[in-house]
Image 1 (tube, rainbow, N blue to C red):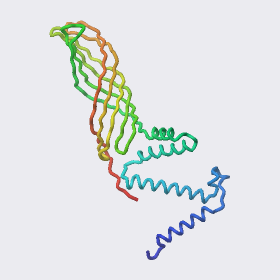
Image 2 (image 1 turned 180 degrees about the horizontal axis):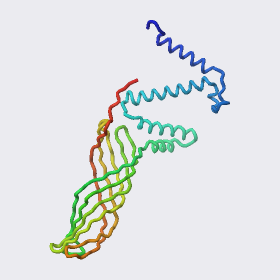
Image 3 (image 1 turned 90 degrees about the vertical axis):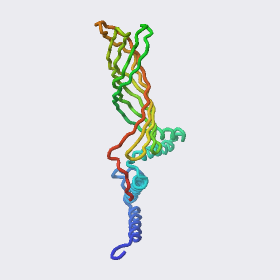
Image 4 (image 1 turned 30 degrees about the vertical axis):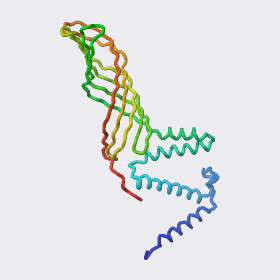
Length: 255
């Protein structure tokens, strides 16, 4: 390099300045730096610089070279590793601390969904021979909490929460027809997995169980009569789908 200091010379000068700064006899105990190992001003500043440099190197590896869009996954792993080290330092057995670190890397979220449907089923009445019972699900919705664990691009999870359903019922024997409509509330639990094919596209498969309990439905027939009948409803739903993430561009920067 002409007309300036070479990179090697600049690094050597910087290293010398750091060493001199670390040896500066300045005590920070009186201004609130409690750690005995960081009493010198130079050592304190040098430690901060090194921590910042390590953080910058981590960002470079995770974002620049690994191409992750965010640091969330690395943060989960880092938190788990940090917890393992701290717990081990305080005498917690490695097995327990490792389990705790795994729990700390879990992913927690909230999901809501609303589905329009036209699912219909029928059966012959046991109590009233000759009649056929029909039921039709108009819509199905839920709000659930989700807890999962991420392995690279795959996320496995379990979920649970509240559910709501819009139903139509009717019965008939060819002459008399009774109808009823009802909105039910209940609960749901499920298990599933999601895989990120790209930064934009993920696919998932999920099994959900719904329980809406036993509810009395008021039927009105075509002759003006009324009839109340208790209906217990549960269902199992298997979902497969794709999720498209908007604005999820790939990270290509390297530092």
